[in-house]
Image 1 (cartoon, rainbow, N blue to C red):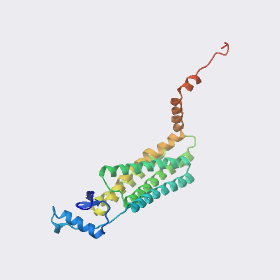
Image 2: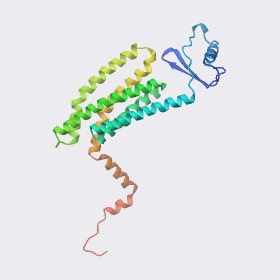
Image 3: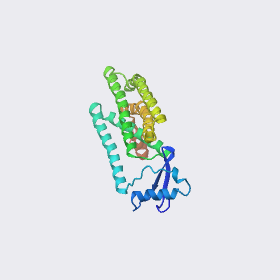
Image 4: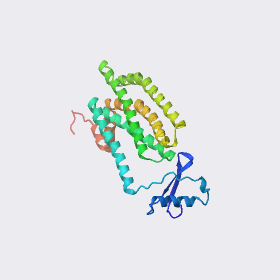
Length: 256
């Protein structure tokens, strides 16, 4: 737009609504809105253009919003670690956090693909996803702990598998019910909540998957010592000479 420096234009809700970002301007908000209207009047009928809202966000405000959003997620993760470690064990907390990181990364990746804007509303949606995924994961963990108490001599992997089978129908029914509701709101709801609902929709799918296919499997890997085996293999690969001599044996009846 003329007189406002570099600008970006993107869809905002429906096809008739657009979001225009311009560089920092010393003009008042009303003057910026008037300049945008004048710039668009050359190609469009000015009578059909409606300026809904003009906002100015400085670098300090944007930085504060970003920091507060990251801190809110960090505090939530710390609280989750403390709670799950107290209610279950520390390895349960680590497995749950890794599953939550998966959910957030998948949702952020989808937003990047769809070229959606990250706002405080989206941060609230992320926190909602974390809460839902954590609740589903704790249900599975609670059933695993119950199976371990009932069958202490059974292999841990069998108790985990039984817990997943016992909670699978509950997890799927809950997720499908929520997805139907969110889908209906996506199709029939207003444009102002589309980004929030899209975040919830993707997060529900990712959260259900991580509770079933990630968190429980991490517990099995931890219990079987797979993580320590991987660490030992990495040490062996980094020090091949020590490996060659550890398997060298000399006869005891001959002088060397």
